[in-house]
Image 1 (cartoon, rainbow, N blue to C red):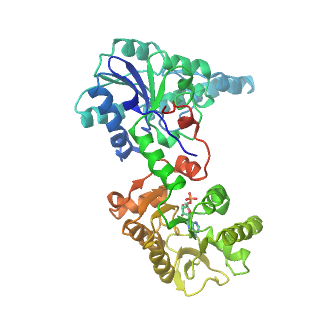
Image 2: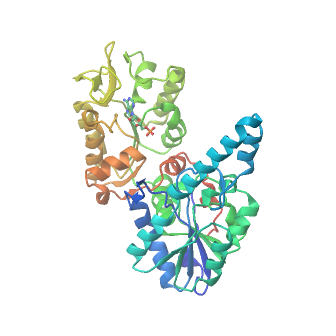
Image 3: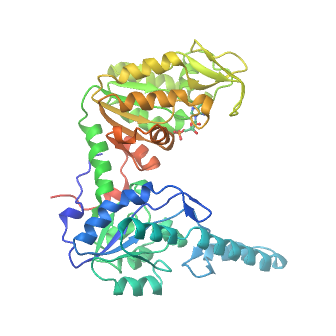
Length: 432
Ligand code: AMP
């Protein structure tokens, strides 16, 4: 999928109200934002719009709120229906519990802390609306001055958001004259604020999405060769689309992590109690056959770190083999494999890496993923990293700046690598 979309720089924003969909779905603990990466990532687009005389209306989702209507405490039709179906004696308590949960979500999943952080990072006040398309948002959007910034409440306080309800999209659009999508993390979702609004406004992308599509799209369509893909993670079934698409494009495919054991089993090796998808053995053989037919080198681990149980403190050992003894499970690639995979990226033109080489959340089984992170960072290749665990390993080791691109979207970057159309990008205007 190649995209050539208009950006904020291709449209006149001066004196215009601009609705910007950001990804402010930040991790929070006790009301405090624990990682501001996503907010920092949105700053270039916001600054550009402010500096160029637009009135900036930001929106985003946060978490998965209970189904409530607006920031008022009204239950949605769906919740009401569920409660009405209960025996009469239970309705009152169920209704009170649902309202309590809604109230709690409105407090916990409000974007207010994001407005405060943005105020600090931008060095100018960011006003917070009490609702999304309600009277407060509309009044504040109407009064917003050019060069000023307003943040709407969590768009998922409305069930209509995820349904891509056209009326809700229209209401959102009614506050602005231009729509900018800069939320790559939700670009694979056709929701009202990620795609629906584009039916009502001229729509372009922000800097973040533009960077994702330029770098990832460029690597997939016209890669500097040799092109090496490293895929890991738990299951082959989650990555079939990516493997299939990449086999057509890469020179070498490296597989690590839990999904390697399905390939082991498919070729008659012992896997002990390792994670293995026994219903995907034929598929694993087909994928290897496809790679062979296309002349793509296909690398699997040659040694492993195995544990007794799927537990962080399980006894473990390194085995110098790609067969795993009974009563043990593969939880990381071994030292020889680390060296083999690391050597394979030396001299590569492009490296795409998605998914950990083992259970990298656990100290004893993180060495393989960290070795790959280091090798990719030092490869000198155009390096693109996606997926939560790989990105976390890169950040932990301080290699983020050594990568050409660290994708901001887990699911979205996987779908991009699968060659699927992302609705949040497809809806934007093409460059002439
Ligand atoms: P994914 O979301 O598909 O990239 O998978 C990431 C998950 O795969 C992480 O939570 C890892 O703990 C898990 N994983 C990686 N290697 C293994 C393994 N050998 N056994 C079990 N789980 C694994």
